[in-house]
Length: 114
Image 1 (cartoon, rainbow, N blue to C red):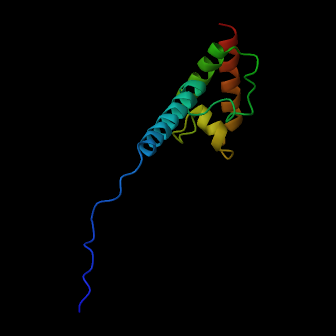
Image 2 (cartoon, rainbow, N blue to C red):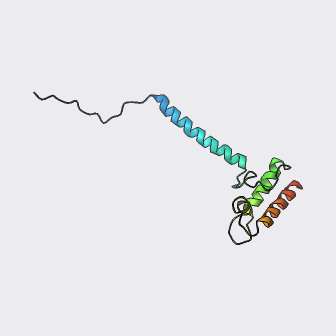
Image 3 (spheres, one colour):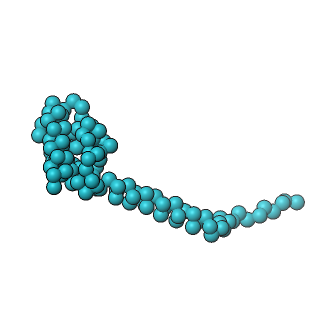
């Protein structure tokens, strides 16, 4: 006599509702973390941690944001297409890197005097 096999169900067993809530909470935490990171960086790609050769410590948060935005929008004049901040932070071989450092220091000084 042939043994009958049970039909295979294509439906998955129901998961408890808290698993879905945990997934949504994790997604919300990631989104909040990204939002917090952007708010702390002032919307600049290269912040004071990336541009360690320039001292931003004497600036208040508004002045710091202003100087960083200026450094992240001004262009390096060697023709590479990088911003001043990006050049100073990432390209140690730029022939005018020291000039760019001095330009950012001037931006910091200008921001402090406003």
